[in-house]
Image (tube, rainbow, N blue to C red; front, side):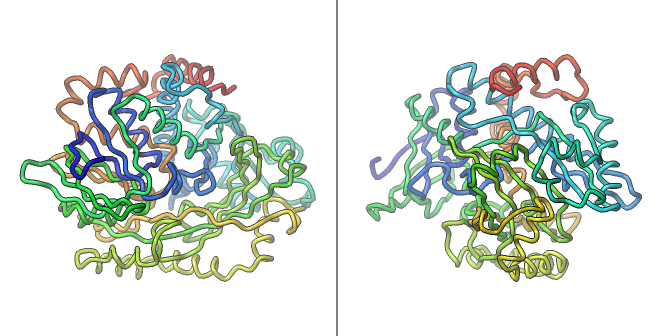
Length: 493
């Protein structure tokens, strides 16, 4: 790369978001040149990495935080239905990449693993039954089944019931449409394929130091080669910031007015990991429970089958940690560098209004090794401490938004930020993140490439995603068509 480079698109961060957008742009505008800059020495090494990402394939089949109980006792289902629709879009996109030869082996990144919700005690059992009944109103969830029977639940997930008091009140839902997705591997496949197309170049160990918009609307991006120490300039017509926890600082450096709405609060995590093949062979499900009061969505406890490469393991957690880093391989100064005069008071207000979260984090930080095993035994009663090892998971940044109507709020989930002129976009936040990357990037295309989106993109996107612009919940024939096609191409039952 010479000292000054002209390109159509700069993608900052070599994660699943940049990879997904890169593939879309390559399909829609094959003549576009794309430069990808990643500060690590590997692709998909931070939030997209399999060990840093829950890998669930979030489809709202098991995640109870997507279906909160309302004050009147009813179950809110809007978010769950939206997330299910979005994951179906992701599966269609991946199916298209299989069909067109961009991906050769679907099992390299996706496998079928049942999704379960599991609760104990009268209160939570009552909630889970209401949740099940509420979701049964939607055809997208009709395949889900419910049971309070120890024997049936034991057939689904033997570790949960073995050694448990047979008189204990328990309940579970089960769906065999769940998946385990290795987003790190998927990212590597997509970016390698993009580079093979010829117009995309990924630069590892390159850190974006600054970016500034010029009078003609284009962007000047300063990039430092961490290997040589040299700084180069890249001129681009469009920039996407998909740097995980690093996105907020880069968005602020862009100086666009939209950046002033946001701050960030970091939350890390740790897993208990079991690699004992005899135990791993007994568990083939992702089992989600109820979150503690004040817990962020990424901290919902689950006993999670993971298949990474040829290795099968069980993860339990995550247990929340706190660091001022915004990335797992970030700096302790990350949090302080994003505190600005325009977001200082909203951040303080959120801190004062979220005592439950702060209490939860303090409780998590005080957990001992034996405390963590006791938490595990709520899911797996016969767990032995010597079979489990504590590992550090990824680092996430929860969005603090100064909303015009609601004021300063701690916003769980993801937030797509785009400039008014559509020349730059950024993704902030965490769960469900990777699982909805396709829908998020479709939204970005609609916002940032509005003219071409209306004139040419919509028809092409319909070829890639047959249900694009339609509701699968409302279209029975289309729903069955795309689900059958995805099951065949992705080798899911």
